[in-house]
Image 1 (cartoon, rainbow, N blue to C red):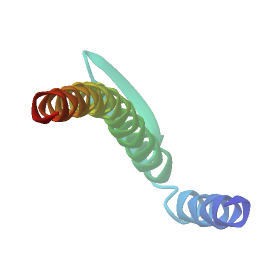
Image 2: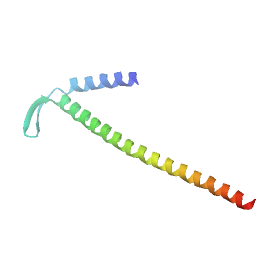
Image 3: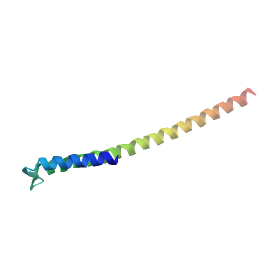
Image 4: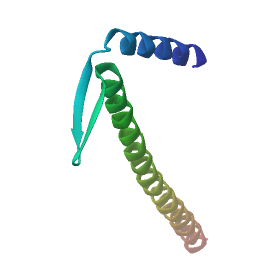
Length: 92
C-alpha cells in the first residue's frame, strides 16, 4: 500500500506541476486565485474525504444490522433447542 501511495503522490505532483495556469475560484462569497492543478487536487481530496466519512457511517449502520441479525439468530437457535428438548420429554 505504501508503494501505491508513493506512486499517487508522484502522479499528483506531476499533475499540479503541469497545470500551473492561474484560475480564480469563487466559493461561498470568497474568491481565490490559485493554480488549476491545486484547485482540482483540493476538489478531489475534498470529495474523497466526504466519500470516506459517508462510508464510515454506512459501515456503522451495517454493523448494527449484523449484530441485530446475529442476536435474532441466537434467540431462534435457543428456541429451537428448547422446543427439541421439550419434544423429547413428551416422547419419553
